[in-house]
Length: 108
Ligand SMILES: [Zn+2]
Image 1: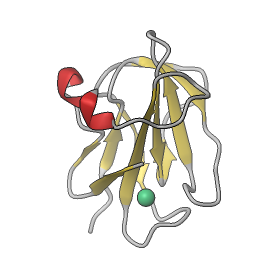
Image 2 (image 1 turned 180 degrees about the vertical axis):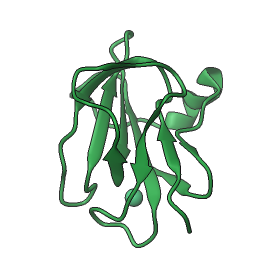
Image 3 (image 1 turned 90 degrees about the vertical axis):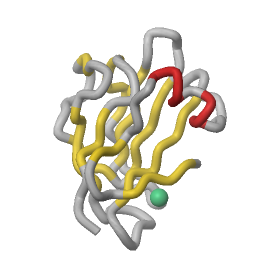
């Protein structure tokens, strides 16, 4: 499985680039409606605080955290401190899946 390009599912600011034990290298993007998307096991190519547009490449999948094959682990929260919700109810209207190329993505 190759390393896919990870793209922002919607425009927003890069809110955090904090690694975690399970998620490894992790990017969070804060969107203008207050929602936050997260991309785990992803080596960032963007800097903290920058604005990214929908569909912009923000990094590539890696093997950081609990990951046996490169994949982006995508999470979606309605606000920064909320629990993740089902992202599929939000992705179709944005029409943009968070990874391009040969990598998988998984939810939650
Ligand atoms: Zn994962």
